[in-house]
Length: 263
Image 1 (cartoon, rainbow, N blue to C red):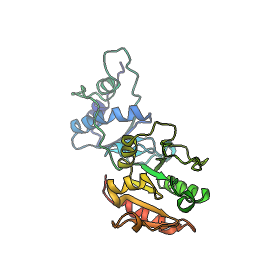
Image 2 (image 1 turned 180 degrees about the vertical axis):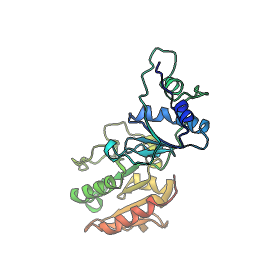
Image 3 (image 1 turned 120 degrees about the vertical axis):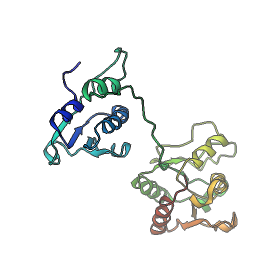
Image 4 (image 1 turned 45 degrees about the vertical axis):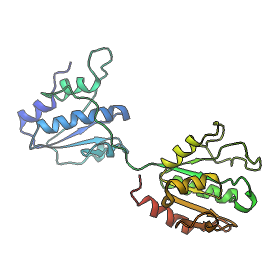
C-alpha cells in the first residue's frame, strides 16, 4: 500500500487543473477508465486530463495522447504519474487497488466499463471468378494496389475465397494476401459472417459478390473487366474498371462508403 492519494492531494492543495500520466498497455488503459470516471465525479470543479499512449485516446473522453515528458503541456497545477500496480492474488482487481491506494477514491469498487463498437475495420475482397477468371480477375499488380489502398485507409483486407466444390485451380492465392478464408472448410455461414461484418466488399463477378449484393449493395465495389454489373443486378452498384485500373474512381467510391453510417 502506498502513502499517496491523488484525490487527497488535490483537495488538500486546492488544485483546479491536474493531469494524470497513464503510460500502460491496452488492458490496463481499458480497466482504468472506470476509475478515472469515478475520480472526476468525486473531484467536481477540477479539470482532469489523462495522458495515455498514442492510439488509445479514443477509449475515453478524458484520454489525451501522451507526447512524452519533454513535450508535456504546461499549465497544470500538478501532474501525477499513475503506476497501476499489479494486484494478482490480492483479492482486488488492478483497478480496485489503484482506485483505493493511488487515486484514494471514496467509491473504488468499480468494474470494467463497456466499449461501444465503432465502424468495422474489415474489408472483404474477392479477386477470383470461378467460371471465367480470364474475363473477370484483375491482374496481380492491380489486386495488390487495391489491397494496399484498403490497408492505407486503416482497413483490414480479408480474401473471402473458399476452395469449394467448384474451385478453379487457376485461381491461386496472390502472394501478398495475408488474410484469407482459403484453408478453412467452405461455409456459407463463414462467408456471410465476414461480408456482413465488413465495411466494404470489393470483388469480381462471382458468388461472394452476389452474396455481398444481397447483404447490402451500397457497400459493394464491383471490379469490372469484361462484364458490366447489369449482367447480375439492376441495383445501383459502385463499378470500376480494372483493365486499366481506375484507381481514382476506386478511391472515391471507397471514401464515399467509409463516410456512411451503415454498420
